Amino acid sequence: MARAPAQPRQAAGTARVLHSAAFAPERARRLMVGRLREWGVRDERVLAAMDAVPRHAFVDEALASRAYEEIALPIGHAQTISRPLSVARMLDAALSRPRSVAQLQVPDKLRALEIGTGCGYQAAVMAHLFDEVYSIERIRALHESARRNLRPLRISNLRLVFGDGRDGLASAAPFDVIVVAAAGNEVPPPLLLQMRIGGCLIAPIGEQEQTLHRVDRVGETDWRLTVLDEARFVPLRSGTI
Ligand code: SAH
Image (cartoon, rainbow, N blue to C red):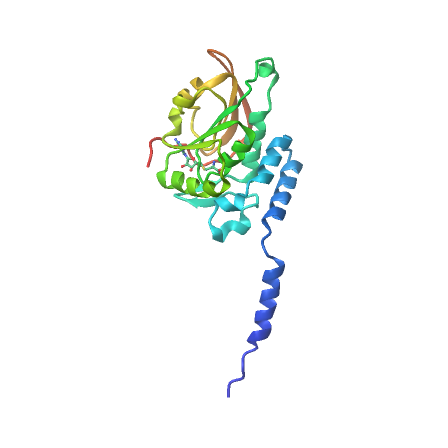
């Protein structure tokens, strides 16, 4: 005769483990911000913005508990949500003003453009940092899912645009800050022309080997290039799908 399996005890044990490992987004977010600070992200405005945005709300529910880890997670259509340090570094760089542009006047209202909305996470963080934010995505399904992810957050200063971000967004230019979240071989020329004088652009450049670049527009026809850290981003592609 078969003996009754010892299932109830096992099940109780599993339940205890699950309970103690329950996902607590606020705590995970605080830990993430602490790590970013340790890794050299200095700008408190960036850290506060990343503390405010529920990153787990931008990924599939099955991945939510991993949203605050230092990894890029899939968001569908062969794209990823950038790892927290990538987002923080780009925005930290965008907000610091090098000496070459420090004497130029800063406008009262800062207007920013993101190329590569993806799931909408970085756009939400940017909406905490700038007065007006525009974000362009070339994959319609992602543009729409970003809209769905962002709706419950009720962010009023963010506009999502479907299109090829390599053309920029002439109707809303000039921009004080442009952040490109995908790597191309060069900075698309329209983006350079849509920068305000005194504004900056942060973009990863390269294919296998990528480096984050900072471009400052210091005059009508004068741009300064600074190479920042190594980077790893999905490719900047042309056209829309
Ligand atoms: N900003 C996102 C990162 C998304 S990954 C985040 O918060 O994590 C980069 C995104 O750039 C992808 O969704 C990809 O489809 C998009 N992309 C690539 N080339 C583009 C282009 N030319 N115009 C607009 N979006 C582009």
